[in-house]
Image 1 (cartoon, rainbow, N blue to C red):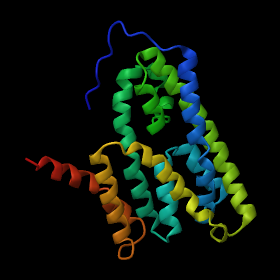
Image 2 (image 1 turned 90 degrees about the horizontal axis):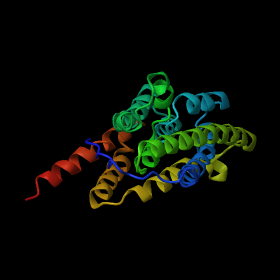
Image 3 (image 1 turned 45 degrees about the vertical axis):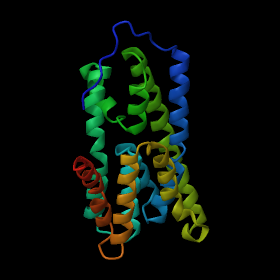
Image 4 (image 1 turned 135 degrees about the vertical axis):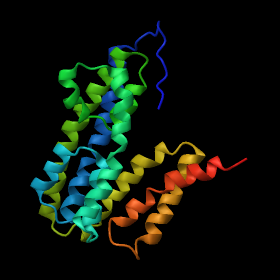
Length: 232
């Protein structure tokens, strides 16, 4: 991806506006950790394991994919492969943010852990490097703290309830994931990719081992782009 150059005389946004927007994103998405904690408990994952996943993995889509595949009885290696595949997008985010943020080498390994959809979106929305750094930091810190706290609370609550399926809480994870995804589908190409991935995933679910349909559904993106390129 080619990053557009920032204008020389770009005027930075007021700090209060950047912090407000970053906190809004961090709080809104961070609270969805409740759903992950509940989903993980329903999949048979202990509270400790769920918390370690949130602390060390910290990428919601991959975490939901992993516990979803395990809950369906999938092979752990297949489930991990699907989660890893979904997480590779963060590497491409990192390529853009490394140029934009230009952080000191000493903090780059720590900052890399916070390179996810939300921090990238907030940082790229800023008009200058100073605002981008602030937005990235506030979003990352807020989201990391809340995501891990709500993961713990969700897992503990699910353990106290017992059978999450009986309460319908096993659907919390997919519901939150769809709620986060829907607003991002702004173009016809993005909607076509999502639609084809949905068809592939659901269509292959009865015939392939758990976790494999997620990997196959990922082929929707290159398939749609290939068909779009063949149009006259």
